[in-house]
Length: 409
Ligand SMILES: Cc1cc2nc3c(=O)[nH]c(=O)nc-3n(C[C@H](O)[C@H](O)[C@H](O)COP(=O)(O)O)c2cc1C
Picture 1 (spheres, rainbow, N blue to C red):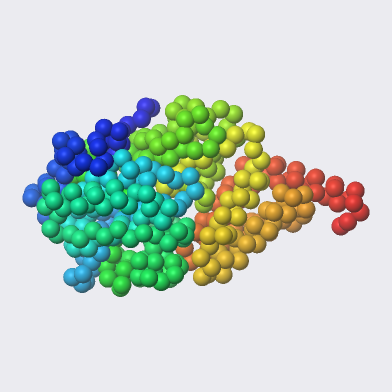
Picture 2 (picture 1 turned 90 degrees about the vertical axis):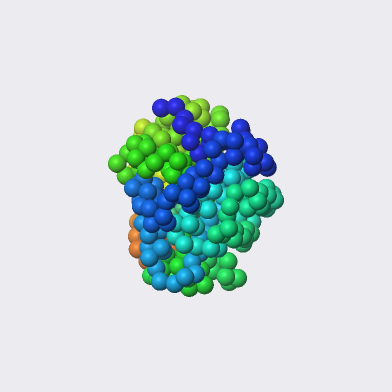
């Protein structure tokens, strides 16, 4: 299946610094339709009917989240656009902000109207400082040319921590605290930023909204699989000829993306969804990209036959251990312990009991960590243990043999 450019349709065509080029291509028509022809409740209903799920990784139904916030008590409500994009191999939000900031601003206007928020924050990744000026200009131009009187949009530069992309840590960060995951419930739509009802949506989720309002929920539902509607952006990197951002209808296969479009050859495995994402071996390259199977935020890292599985998993765990916020013990200690075991295995000091220890740690972390980081940190370990167990066992056999030569236990 070829690419389907809906979110990317303005990229490379409009001038991202000049709103007139966006207005000339039906820009802000969706916002005007929502404001002039639809009540906030009917916007929520339309998005619910579209089946749009969050594009930031967790895949929560967008309209349902809005409904909860809209119905929550209190006049003051907030919308937060999550532009932290700290996930390993993720760069699709950056691409959108760089090439079409107006779709994002339009999406923010629609979402804020729907949930009844008069204040929106864009939490911009610290490393994306170079995007700040362009994004500010887009907000200013939209304020001048299109009526956005209902809304004040503020850009908040992130804290440079992976965990600050996690929604509860992100809110702590905006509140001026150290970014750490919060205990839940309460969930943000009932008690979020400064205790007020808050909706947090990813950049891509918000940029999808104008297309749904303009073309209708049933048009959007007409694309994809049973539980995965619409198109999705993928940022592809690693061992491919043509890395970049691609847009595909959900349900397209991993093979279509990495082999047919990106020219990957000699693939050993692919990690989908960033550092905590699932690992797919080449034998399963026809797996559909969807919420039902494997997706996450759409970061896709291709690993070819020249690489060692264990080295890849060790480096991933090193990242997660460094980025754990440290608030909950299972994640703080679990990632550290996993890293120690993986380090032993990669340096020829592995023991037979190490594989069982990795599996036991995985279960504990999954069940008892406070946020998605710790809950999903073991995914690459478990997946590679499942599909590449031989690589682990070979390392252990080699270690045992080398130790026997040295005369050590
Ligand atoms: C460790 C961690 C990092 C995350 N980083 C991001 C991020 O950079 N951007 C993002 O949109 N969501 C990120 N998320 C998911 C958010 O917590 C949240 O689910 C998302 O922003 C909601 O928006 P959506 O429903 O539109 O996807 C992260 C989650 C975890 C556990």
